[in-house]
Length: 371
Image 1: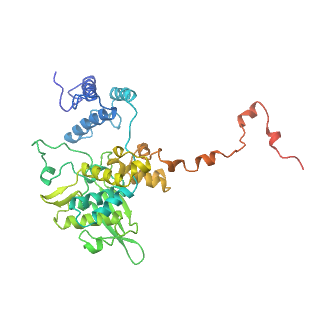
Image 2 (image 1 turned 90 degrees about the horizontal axis):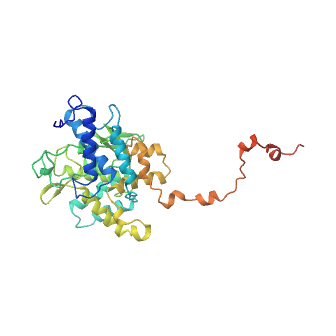
Image 3 (image 1 turned 135 degrees about the horizontal axis):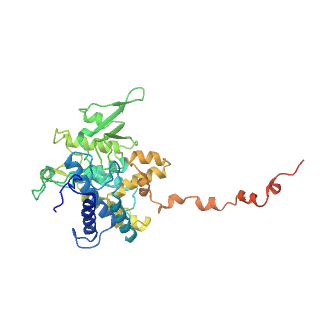
């Protein structure tokens, strides 16, 4: 029997569907779809999730063949398989967070004479990504040229749909304070002068991978003329308007030698590593350059908020995390998280085990003597 390509439960039994998905998961684990080397459990989980997401989006329904109906949990056999893979996996080497000095250095370099349009766009996008806790797929393109960013890629095959939608010009809204200090929204056709003097900016997320839709994230100016996320967004919008009137253009767009081109994840990764190397992250902060990547911006922003004293709830809302997975972005390897701990722990508190009172009364020794 040939398995239905959509794994339709009306045509394929539950056991057949599970068998096909676990065989696929085992093949991904063995690296049969790559370099024939064993992959991590996370890679298998991502691959299976992609299959379910593709089918759900293609079918135009909420049916996801890899998840338990009405939940975001994998089918039990798939979940057990992934748990087994996780137990076998070696310790994960996570990407480490960076501080704001990395994107700030990129912005400073981009402001120098001779900087290219691509370098300027990469710099501003990294600063925005740090402050807004963005995922790399929200502000970069997988394709360099606009023609490749259409419905078909280089191979002529239809591009795979993705849940996360890239930010467009129309998704950015600027705000300016009135005479009473209240934020007022600027019109979509606001002048460059108004945009570059705005007091705040909002990004609208039309859709993202965890299911959140039409979510707004807002930041206000830092007070710095250039090293500010609102000013960076202003520079991006003003520049894009100089070569296109399309409100649907992605924020990753810039005018290159070959026309409209786009910033890719590799562009961002290379820039971050170069800036961190210049700032001596490895020598002076113990952060290896190979552990810095696009994820370091989102993790760095979350760490900055945590170290500044913002609550976990505030960080979770800013980063649009639905679960406690956001805590993985707050690195417990940073020295700041243990500041003052040893000093506080060195205090003797003279505590008493109150459960001991059930066997031996110690209240007499603690009570003050009668006057």
